[in-house]
Image 1 (spheres, rainbow, N blue to C red):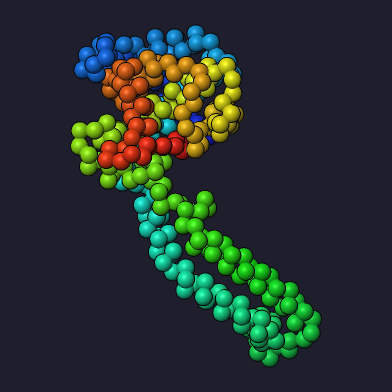
Image 2 (cartoon, rainbow, N blue to C red):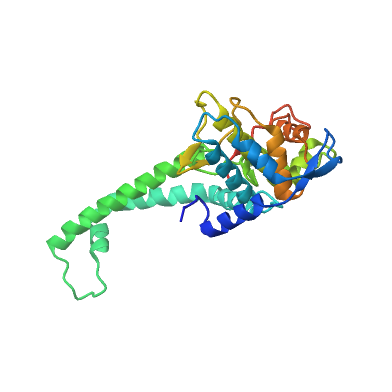
Length: 300
């Protein structure tokens, strides 16, 4: 049985692929308007994909990756709020306690240095007060005390770094907001107050947008002539893993195939133009701000 990353039950994915491939038809747009739809067989799209000249692996592996992306998207839930909201609140609470915590650590380190004999005996103490603490025990305690002191110093240094830099890479930045498979540099819910914008539509269908991004990235990656130097994507077996990636500019996007697959997965009727507009909207200026959005695809 083939193993697939992030899928605990390979049979479930393979059964889904079989059902998906034999799906008779899906809604597809005739023109640029999403309202004009006709019935299109999904097998026509999959056959067309098989004939795409690829520069990486094979067209069969490309198809597998496309279906893997579709499957992952079907199991994704539309987030009602920033996924990291709870973690961010906990982080902010911890940051509020940092000054007092650092003061406590400093006091403890001072005590261990100034009252080393007592500290050694405390570390060597046993549950039985009648047990004699000999020199060998004290020697072992000295080693343990040194390790404890070293750990406290490391903890203090690390916490000081966090205090000086709340956006430290080791922390969830106050500017990191995760919606679906994307990390944004602003809170999407706040910006959805701008009614009638592309961003509002994007927020309601962030999973659709995520699948459009994933599929487009795959088409571009497999058909590119040069390996994108800035792409952190990597293969896990036959599956190309996308983790913290932005869209690459090399290769061909095959928007018509992306629209067909997304329509088949979500019973929608997006056109090639709809796909392009949706992906372009990811990087347009945030309403009411001069700052451009710069979302990162972090996976399903």
